[in-house]
Amino acid sequence: MRIVFRNTCLLILLFSSFSVLAENESKGLHWSTLKGLEYRLKAGFNIGGTSPFPLPAEIRELNSYQPGMQISLEGNIIKWVDKKWGILFGVRFEDKGMETDANVKNYYLVMDSPENGRLEGVWTGSVKTKVKNAYVTLPLQAIYKVSPRWDLKLGPYISFLTEKDFSGAAYNGYLREGDPTGDKVIIENEEATYDFSADLQKIQWGVDLGAEWRAFKHLSVYSDLTWGLNSIFEKDFESVSFDMYCIYLNFGFGYVF
Image (tube, rainbow, N blue to C red; front, side, top):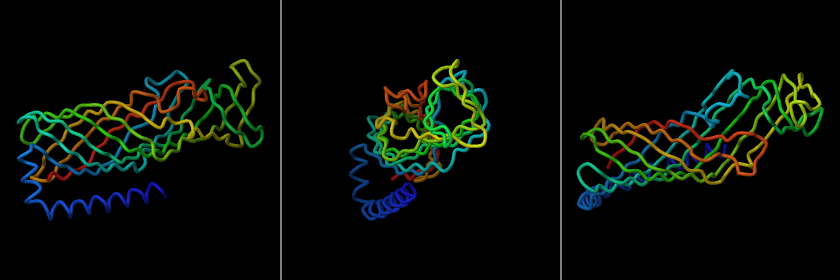
């Protein structure tokens, strides 16, 4: 509910910005054009996953994947250096998340079982995972105008975590305590849960590659691939034995002033 409320507030803020800019369009935009500045507002969706790359041998089969409603709202300022090249700075409020169900083998996990209490070891069975995180992201990109309608963009981004949820459950399987030769704990008629939200890194960074097409004078359609280059978990986190990265495709529409 907090994320829905936040997105509603941001939408209201964006529409208010549209109104203010429209009222001052003749003066402000004329001055901006003389300075080589351009402004864009965007709204879109993220689809992708928070995943290890490449997939480790412990993950044997993906049973289901649900991307959910991951909203992205963004404002850009572009400084054109010449007719072809420019520098883009942006502020993006975005959700990144998913829900998955997978079969795993010898998957190191720390979890809480209603019958057996705190368990730690290697799990073989099924795992459900829910990720729902919110970020404030600052992209900085070089932008190249291929034609009057097409722009290409590439550059780094840095994201600040504002809301977090990384949780799930293990079921229909067994855990070997400590290592693959440890005592066997069978979990069949219950779910052993885990919540690693407190172990997520507050700052993440990566690369943003995108393209934008000017459909009309003020309306554009865009797509960006954002690829995280540092793990979502803190360095001393050990409950998952491999790094996980945010890999998402962001697409939507924009208004060009």
